Image 1 (cartoon, rainbow, N blue to C red):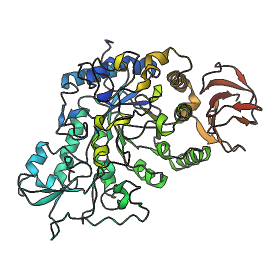
Image 2 (image 1 turned 30 degrees about the horizontal axis):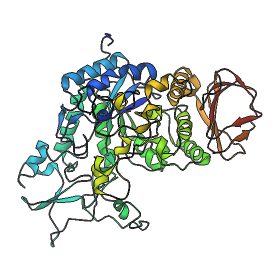
Image 3 (image 1 turned 90 degrees about the horizontal axis):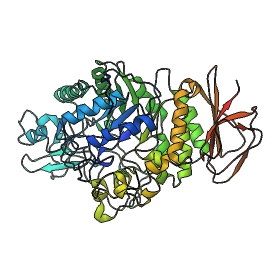
Image 4 (image 1 turned 180 degrees about the vertical axis):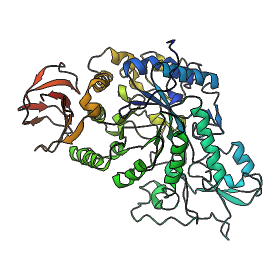
Length: 543
């Protein structure tokens, strides 16, 4: 382990590469089949020297009954014993900082576990001081729930409490009661929690499910969704979420988070706001913070249809709508979404979008395993752990398949553990693993390595302007990143067929292609360029 002094004030940058670690599935060091903090520490050299990431987004490690695998918190001030303890966490921060890697904690403000002491008090009696810390409501005259709001994980968002004769609200599982963010005491306490972790030298937070954080004060019914197709669509979609999420007051709460984080130097917030493509909505969340740096997640790469036009149109609009000082970011996947190689049904496509993500200005978020081409793992009903998939069956909503163990080597259980892991390892781990791909010059891991290394030293990629090119071939998306000193051309073939392209540029110099079959530095004739299916190029042009 390195012995450098802990660097307490690491600065964030607009082009920082952030790597999401889902700790349960990253590295097991205790032999229980579940990843832990010591396991993350043991893999910091990989993140520093191979991927050269700037920050780790650490999925929740707080004390929890693990009904939703850490997103149901029973104590925000403690590390769950599954992952380690506070001493190991402090070591983790120190080791990461010594490598110039920042720590982004996952903060869950919308709800707690029903085993949290606050909720135990809240449900003990109507007159308990903590009663108003959660959202309680009396039944309708017929005893039914207060309104038609639904839980994201299936069924009503209201759970009846026999002891007090009222319903409490839960946006997710019944064991995840929603906090009442209209209560000033709740706001004060949750900001106190942020300060607790900031005092432990974490560098910022990913804010979970903030789009749900505050609800309509009048508890009005959500309107019916006219486009909902029973039996075909997720039942949650049968109503439009007008009153139970996305309320205007959300901005005020996020401002308070920004103010708290702004009390410290060099801290960053990224918020999980929504999965929508409306840039007009995204803009509101860029403008809200006066203190501290904040960016709303940009999930559009997860949702866009596979076409050169769709990606170009989105990026052109995204660029036009962001102002100076706004920090864009680009996400291909995460713990809630299918892995990019499975979603696109092609590793060649996954390589192409990786080239896109890593040649744009802004923060790329890499979900663990994306860099080695990990795909979703088929999960048998007997292996299923995710409550969402269990509660809402028949709609393929389970998230277990994209949370499986990291594939490190050809050893049993992919080098993740010495015992049977909590979720099954992919059958293809003998092919797709870190050790084997490091030795393969054409692997997707080496593509990431090539792109990241170039990104780190290219002024045009980190600071240059972006503009797309009008070309006659509809299946190709081409754009330029440029400064006064450097001009980089990126060409991406979205077609499943070989495409010919002719561009009005002089000869270019190759940085890399997605297949990694051509040598860096070789000359490329842009008057007659053939691109293989789903092939991309990064090229240097003469100024």
